[in-house]
Image 1 (cartoon, helix red, strand yellow):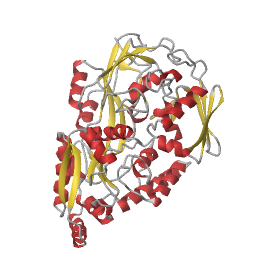
Image 2 (image 1 turned 120 degrees about the vertical axis):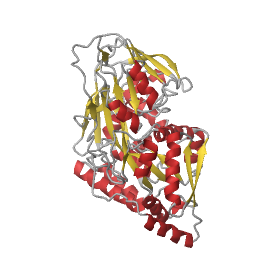
Image 3 (image 1 turned 135 degrees about the vertical axis):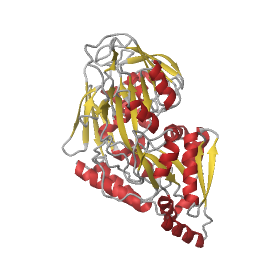
Image 4 (image 1 turned 60 degrees about the horizontal axis):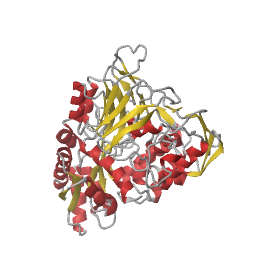
Length: 532
């Protein structure tokens, strides 16, 4: 992965660090606080009866972070960082229906798995065209996917390792052959690999054009500021009801909710615990709980304190996530050191870490007797929430004998360089945002020894084998057993420490109907309309 791609991924985590977690109030220390409130992803809140859809109007959407590019290989295709914007331009091959817990065809008409779990067949709809009038056929899908891999888009490392071949076996059929079973393969098609670009979009490598098969076309784009989309009269699923779909940049959860309250925007994406709780009290929307939304990342590399597993264990034993919840999130977060929280279908009986300062101090003292000087650097961006997390962590670690130096970076770019290029940190805060629908992909990205997104420097052949087992599981029972083994290995090795679960919440006004969610808070708005 290049520095630009690393920046794309890191920015997502760092933005999450500025305002992470989600859901309402309630917690219980290092266990599974607040778990009873929400049990699965879905649409929440009450709305009046919709009645018949009507055409017209402008819907303004304040996303979490406005994209600076509409190229899915350059902008992380996640709900918080441009995924909704791009999905409504390019479309998705399939989407994930959280209520039914299944993948539903979109641009694809069908998606089938072979009995031996080694082949996935994508059947395309007849008559679908890109916005430039060219057909969306199997070769266009293959070429778009190959470009995504070649340009190292998100999840391309997993795709390249897992996929043996991808072929246009007839004009309307794409056949994907795997090296081994991969139960989460359909999820790949709900992110960047499922956003199909017209050949003309990338015909000139130096002049990318946002041409897709989604319900809208780009009318105006000011990178990182605003995006205006116009409906397509020739869209395969019918012309969208909206006259205009706008995406606007409003920084911070409170200003976004204020814009909702004033009518300045009709939809918004939230992650901050306080503002998710606030918005859920008064707006309907799509709520998506996420495991490991808050995480203390430890540099495991030689030359750093975290190379010593006993130091990592001491860090875990010194920490009480409830302290961070109170000081950084006003008690609205969901602290837990479990990887899979109590509400998760993958929840297991691997024990949570409980704070034990006496044992932590013993481990630090033993390390000092062997030459450890006690010094640890904590690198973070400079904003109020990040400061509160950093100083809370500093106080808890210093109390057991560490000497934590909190170092603030001037910009996210500087932070990216320190984490992904120089690996110049001992501790840092982040977010892995692991949904129940797609647990393997983000665990693999964070933990696999050769993963370009593994900033921990964690290198464990045993963990790699456990990740393989999870990826290749063909039943929920087998996958749950594999994920439990992974959580046990994380508990034993402490490559990082989970601090809590959180949520994405996409809120909309009560007069907005027809918003369709997919994975990671990506919203499909081709059938969205505003009641008059």
